[in-house]
Length: 430
Image 1 (cartoon, one colour):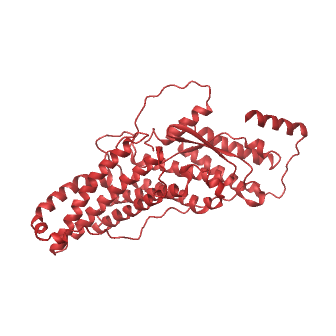
Image 2 (cartoon, helix red, strand yellow; image 1 turned 90 degrees about the horizontal axis):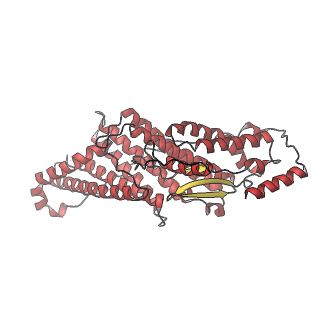
Image 3 (spheres, one colour; image 1 turned 45 degrees about the vertical axis):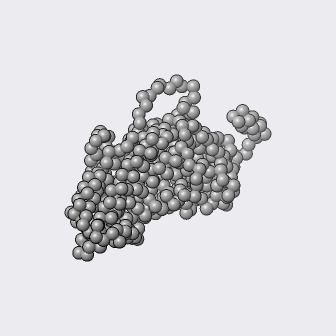
């Protein structure tokens, strides 16, 4: 979870720095409780593994050198806890992919040759996993690209000079954030549809929780939900957006958050960042439902029958109750480890925090006589369902680097002395 300079990126990478910079004395940093607007559920970073020794004599030396160099470059950039390094890190990951894609190709027989290592920060502890499968490496790279994109989206909606009481986000920043959320969802959707299917069951059982299918799908739906929520905020600022459009966007956000909750429902073993992720989805689901009932109530209230006004009041009262519950859920989310701050209301919630209580009180008083007379009609109507409009961006893997398709591979032989030395080095590092 991230806000500009303090984030899962900072924490996870800070964790990696302590390992990579072993022996260096670290200065104590002042503890800052981060603010969360767009959630980044987890962040994993690559750990050191000896690609060069493993690939020696198997593929051309220059190809092995490039693979090693690019992965080490990612590892080094990931030590930079400054968010300004995100662009550089994304570029390095994108340049690494064509080299990595070759390792996943069945005809080379290299899929299970290398034990790829990654580190994940869970509950403040460093957790390292090593899996001898190139599809696992590809999954981890794409997941990291998705999380970095969520980090970038978060920076768009949280100003550098953050006011704890008032939050104003420009329309351009909101539109940029939506684009980034769809891009992140595209990476995650590709992971589920095109990468996980290549992993055998025994490898899937080794995966950390954040790479499980349910978590990936939940995070993708969360990105789509937050994108829809931001679009609703943009609609509020547009004179051309009708009430029907606003209601539709609010109802679509409910559907996306509902799907995210469903994806998480298959696993009851939630703790640490996984538990915080679940609490975030529950909080945002309540907010989205409050918005949907508010706009649905306004449209229903335009009817002329008494039943319309009674149903509208039921919607407004439900919205008011859901809004109160969402504030409690927000507090539960913030207090769960790692502790975060409640963000100032912005976008649609800034508007609804004022309008919902006012409208519920006003309409209850206005139609109080109908509520007394038509008690049988006091039934909360179902929210309308709409075809979901936001979809993850289409993502396609880059073609394998041309070196993989070279007709002539120059693979120098290895002398017995060199082979024995490599074996000794390997034992020494274990």
